[in-house]
Length: 338
Image 1: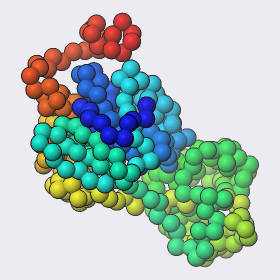
Image 2: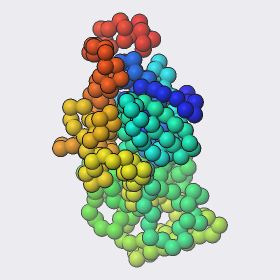
Image 3: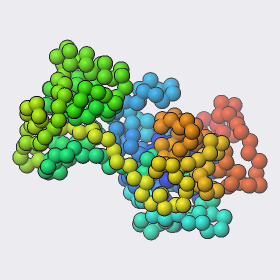
Image 4: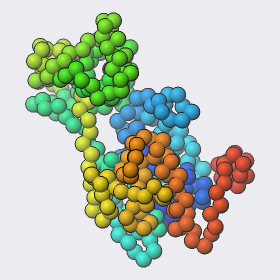
């Protein structure tokens, strides 16, 4: 639900991506109320904003799930705990007020809680653009940096640029629905999963898509409609262009919170995932520790351990009793399944 402009809660979570959403569940099992703040206008983080229809294959018990489906399932899972959302807002400042933290957003909303959880992925993110003069005139019309709806590309002549997982994954997923697909990369050296590269080259060998090893030099078309991508190997005729050159990550105001940083990530311990400030935690891609893997499932684990320490801070006079949802009637009542 949308929250009141100013209120006090148990835990404020910065970031409403999958890891932030699952943290609501783990906190809710311990009777801790959560409020989430996110710069995007909807929950789901990068999964919902950049990859809503992209399949994810490494979520336990879900052989395949899209970014939007995962977000929807997490929202359903946390519904019994009635979290509060402040969406479309950026955290502007964080300051200690006695035993609680005061968080202020760029809309002047003031939130207070004894525990802050930073689950902001890599911070704010913007796509890196190809060095093509005048490409801005085509953006959002025929040039895109993310796939939000696959139907946008059905029966189109599509050129995809890039050599990483996004470029290869979308080549494989869009190939069956487009009229023609060309993948261009500056060299025959790939940063994507080996299996994806193998499958792509099988499609090329079978004549189901084209591969061009070369450099993009420009764009042709009028009124925002691309007609061809020019390269040092000739023109690639197309009516849709997808460029996957990676993302530029910025911590933004989080960098000014006074936390210990490691290469623009927040250092945490691996017992509680607490930062250098007591009561401030970091989970998900934004946190750093030896052996860290940037996986959604790793963030889920981090959120579960964080919740245990959050309880100790929020309920110092109560004893923490760890319970299994499979056997605890109390937990099953909270989840509405008793």
